[in-house]
Amino acid sequence: MGFQVSVQPSRHSFHAEPDETILAAALRQGLSLPYGCRDGVCGNCRGKVLAGEVVHGKASPEILSEADRLAGFALFCCAMAKSDLCIESREVRTLDDLPIRTLPARVHRLIRVAPQVMILELKLPANERLQFLAGQYVDILLKDAKRRSFSLANPPHDDSVLQLHVRHVPGGQFTEHVFQHMRERDLLRLRGPLGTFFLREDSRKPMLLVAGGTGFAPIKAIVEHAIAEGSDRAMAIYWGARCRADLYLLQLAEQWPARHPNIRFIPVLSGSPAEEHWSGRTGLVHAAAMADHPDLSEHQAYVCGAPAMIAAARQDFLTRCHLPADEFFADSFDYSADTLQAIATGIAPETGVAPHD
Image (cartoon, rainbow, N blue to C red; front, side):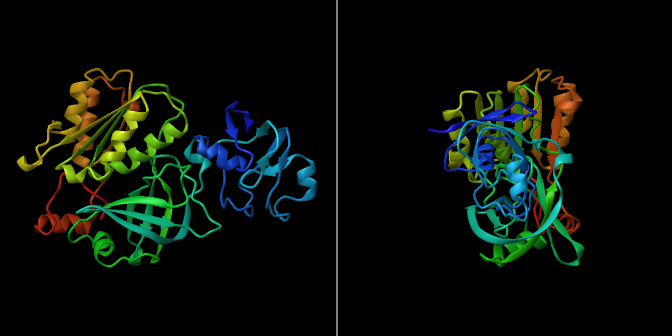
């Protein structure tokens, strides 16, 4: 049993279980209501109950007074439905809706998923949450005013930890630290959310999603958000790497089309050794996408990876496949200056996929 919640003015609706908060139910189903702490003390999730009944839970009386409650206001991070509801709340769907914040974060887990790829999970303080759009990134703030940018690989509704995919760059200041010295519970500072690479939810066009290497991170976030939202938009996902080991979450990606008929997944390897006996697609990942989609005039394209791959995809998708220029969205994994120097001196061989170092 549960309750139906409709949202004004968007007219979106979702299902809420009796034992979950209105915010948690909305996020679980891909609707991004505003929030901050998710603990009843910041007031960012405040909205109005237009019809129906809620229990207010642990909402702080300093943030939600008795007069507020009588007037129909609620903190949706604490309130739970006791009947079908109609609520009034804005939804977070544009960059203007999101504050950019600087926050501390502790290393929650380090998971080595490939010889040169680490999944870094970060946990914010108990009373803090970072609200973001699927596909955006954060800056890790280093000493001497330096920063390193990493895409968020988790979708917005799954924000108990922030997941970053870090490729080891020999000679890279930050990635050397991640792979050699970082430990669980280490403290970092981050700033975000940042970037204009995010899922455009107001479109019904089929999506072509192209990732190179750890450029898979924001593509993963976009796909998982679309799934949570119940989207039936066609999604063709191409993930390019050199060898099979570089497809570090291959099993996860293969599950998407097995469970969702609107999704296709095509891995592409550019340098698979003979002993791998790779029988799948080979060559440049964007070329494989073009071969399958010679006409992109009615599509949106989301492309993430090395600058050279993005430049080639932009040129070819627009000129040869007729993709409208305003439907090409990209996140370029640029090298920092010290990594470029390492590449030039032969310390860090260029992999074809430029990670943030």
